Image (cartoon, rainbow, N blue to C red; front, side, top):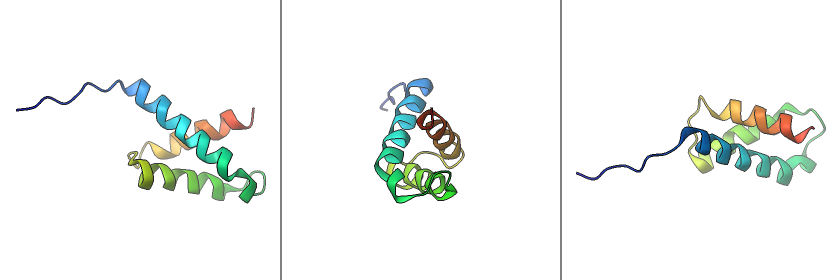
Length: 70
């Protein structure tokens, strides 16, 4: 039997939030400021391209957007 690598949950969330921030930076010019569609697209990107669990994607997208607006 093979053992799965131990994955640090904090490290995973940090990396996926960074991916969300990168997606936002790449696609922000396609949306008006405050457009909720960018949030939705970021969630979809996390879930479909990076296989982030559906329950976690909105939280990561929200954190990334809040960091981006600072």
